[in-house]
Length: 314
Image 1 (cartoon, one colour):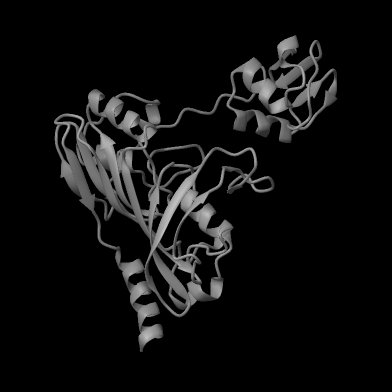
Image 2 (image 1 turned 30 degrees about the vertical axis):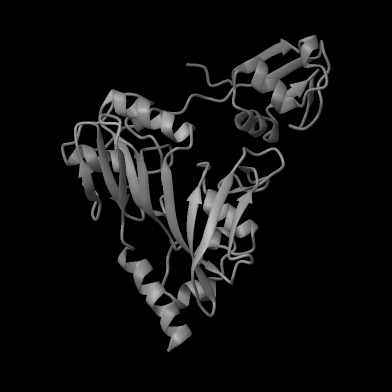
């Protein structure tokens, strides 16, 4: 098998005259805008023989050359028990779980730890076969470092219904987070697009060309060094709460990736961001009735919250 990269070259249609390189790649080769930008950022795109960046403009008739990404190695689902994964609801359509910290929703390249899908398989659950092979039944995700409620589709009608509800933004996704400082105002909406971080591919950021992202928050309780917030998401971008709170200058306590104070995290014995999906509500795919689920804080977050209360009130 050849190890040489696959190169594809196409002339830019006149109708794309003046478009950005990443937009032209997306239209011509069928990649997402984010993937197209990644290809340009890594020197894999040329126009008329010269390497170009994602934001340069193309002209009609120019030759656009792209080094195609290699197909990822197949990812296997390993049926492996997940310690601490709680089943809070189970019927023929949906299983609702509380995902522990340190667990991914599904297998992915570079992740060798436990997964929700693997844990359900080990417990004998059969889920929907819709979706990519490694993420069958998964209709939404939580970060590895975030705990809380997740719904997994067991039937095909549930997969279709839940995906539609998430797209139409009728699912209630409620979180509690402990953030540094004291947001002003105490209730508000952060409406700022989120895209890949321009320097760090493992991070996300508020960017001008990112996807629309909307986060609502309300103060629950204020402490000397931090504030406990109730957060509701309209959209479901990767790291959305973490990125928005950091951009708002109030990062989630313990979230060192997005600028949280490591001294405070150490004092509270936190090894991850203080963020938990406490509430999940949706229309049941089988009955049409509205169903609501709630989850208590796990031990590490409850302990840290008790400590900030003690430090505030004595």
